[in-house]
Image 1: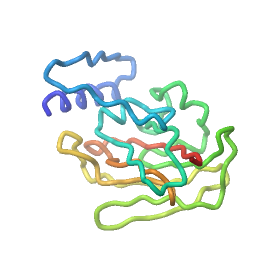
Image 2: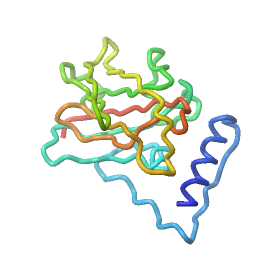
Image 3: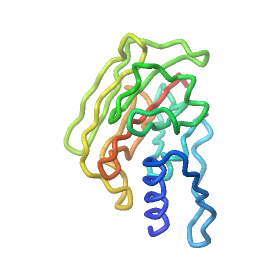
Image 4: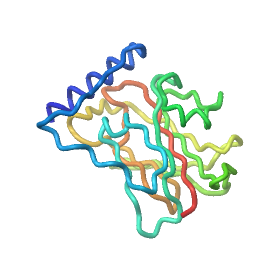
Length: 180
């Protein structure tokens, strides 16, 4: 738990100053983080650092092909592979964004995205740019205390779970789903 808290604090420092590069090293007292499931093609390691997880569903028709996050609406510190989806319309600083597309990048329209939390939820369809978008509230979630309150997924799809605004820092989460 102590190592997770230290990693989280280092992550916060990197949010403030993107020029800082942190080597988290390999701690002997920590078990290695399991790799994301093989179906996920692209995974932002910052999600793992926050304890955010991928939840496969047996009956799902769509799998999570890519997942990443931004800080304060900035795309400066996203993995290089995520930039293929960067659009001017995706600058929200405390949102969940979702897209369903074919393997060659064509949008699949007509499905709903769901954002759930312990006592409620909301849903949206994709906008003209192919992205669904729902803002999330603070909750003052501390990742050192466990998973965040939100789960984000497309109807009939696998889930991205444990989301939240870490210590009320403004982050946005992105997921791209594809047919199985």
